[in-house]
Length: 524
Ligand code: MCA
Ligand code: AMP
Image (tube, rainbow, N blue to C red; front, side):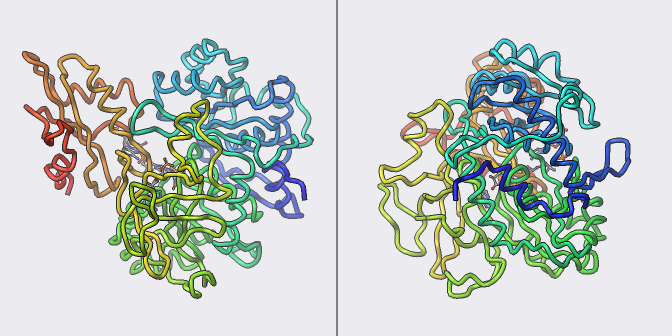
């Protein structure tokens, strides 16, 4: 069979009755909105036709920084359909961050919120962008106005498995963010595997039409954009779509749903709701967690409160999903079906995973080392950074995840640490190097170190330690306020201390482990 556009594969799974509800959501004005499968088909065709009418060069990027809405998802589908490359951007990013992404990716089209048009369009036009559209979360803006003039049928662009579908920016321990290039083949192969491995079904469930997904994650990262949306669409499953995570709204939706996906912070916040009981969760089939380590306390408390065992999985922007605890018996692993806390389960079918030492030599079972992976889901490389791409692959073609872990005798993978200097806060990645260089630019600062410490809500948060220049007296609060003007809010350290020196080893390297130990109980 010849490979099809990812959109074509997703659309082929729409139910035969296109008038059924595909997505249900609450509009900003409180109104319940229902979108049928036909609505998704027509609305994505109109936007795809609009994009096609712009006669963009092959491989053009469509960069999108908008609030979550069903139309924003349709814009993603339309970009695939028209054969262009989707580039989602976190709504928290500020102008300096957007300037970098837009300058680096050189998108032909940028879509932003109506409120941000002034500054975003300036950045975009300076970078050579042809068109800047706006899209509000209340169906306003020039994108939909223009799309309304286009037809509601559209033949999806022919795409090969190796053609680019999306670029996701992911930071690095050194230097600026890198755009991970994901292909139609990467995304579709992973979605097909997950549909099967997680037992998605088109029968039974609260409406007799199979699974219903509660979608409460942002749609500018792998978890909310690909894992959640593809799984639901590929199964013809309805989504209960939430613009923002609200634990009470999720609880209220559970009786009408079967699957929920969240980062650990979402589970922690749901556990704080007295309404979370076995009764409330009794119709649910599956709770999936990932993007950050799920504490065993959360895993166990969830089991006790709901009677459900969270299925934890592991992935990356560069690879989409890599491993998963089993949903049902996995014949490759002795029929094992147990979901084990503190593990991320087995490599998904088709994914190769090995644990190696620093010389890339495979380690025996149970030993801790660097995790490397292979498979049809592994990205094509970093956008316009061939040397960075080469650095992250071994000579024999394995991708170096930067995660440190082990595989036990039963085949379960555990992540025990990271070789990359990275903080994962509430499921968002924060690279200390980026924050430190922003702090070091501030007046009165000689140097700084940012470390991740445990936090009851976000799992981990950043803490900054700053050394003053001679004669200067910078203040922690003022430093944080200055950072807020430059960086996405989730990257701002939760505390900033001014110290007289940073602990260093004999080589002069800052001993971050000592700083982490010093501030470990700050939020206990
Ligand atoms: C918000 N704040 C945060 C975070 N989120 N601080 C640290 N870490 C965070 N994640 C801060 C804001 O800066 C703000 O501070 C205050 O909290 C309130 O902001 P608000 O936006 O109202 O917060 P919220 O709505 O409560 O958001 C928390 C959240 C959100 C719902 C947990 O962070 C979230 O949706 N996280 C999910 C991220 C995700 O989808 N990750 C998947 C990546 P101030 O008031 O001081 O300004 S994909 C991935 O990692 C891989 C591939 C994978 O395996 O899935
Ligand atoms: P990102 O760059 O946003 O794609 O984040 C990918 C990183 O998130 C991985 O390299 C891991 O360090 C981390 N991650 C994702 N899922 C898990 C998990 N279940 N447990 C621990 N870490 C995870």
